[in-house]
Length: 239
Image (tube, rainbow, N blue to C red; front, side, top):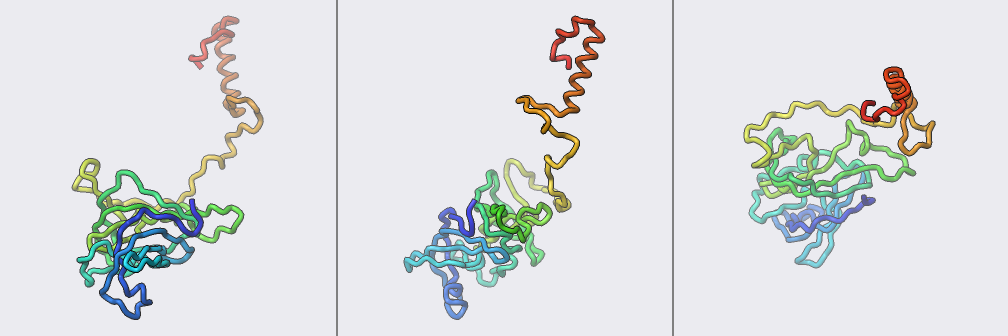
């Protein structure tokens, strides 16, 4: 887990040069680069730090719409930033992982179209600083989203949550996939918020709640009642 900035796998990219000149010039031009880090600033888009190899320069704070992965892209097919990345960053704490098994996929965009691509890696947020006030939804299950980075067939990259993506796999997933019709999780699941089970009364290593202890004592008494004093030597397996 990192605060604000995280290393990235060294993906080779091309930067659209208008992003290097504050959109004043460079339109239609690209320059090669390599992703170095990603930055997560709450309420902002992901920012990618990129080594511009032709210049020997490290350029920071580029949104995902600034990049393509191939030279022969069609400018008329480029998607806007708010389609490529649906949600702003949820927090300053982030992690980057490469999920296993994931490969080809399609995401459903704001333009109500499916966009095909290849999975790269995933960026996720949480609120790791318990001493600071949590003012966003990075740890609220109904609202939390992750950013799956996808190299799109049109040459761009996207950062999409799980619930906008359908995956493909030649071995595991049939060609005639069902359409997901699930409901968003509205729960924050916990297991230690029940008042019906507690072991705070005992220091035994193989602890039991009072109810479990009572059940065990009842079983012992039943064995004794059925077998007399020999029941004191009952087989534990029958309990």
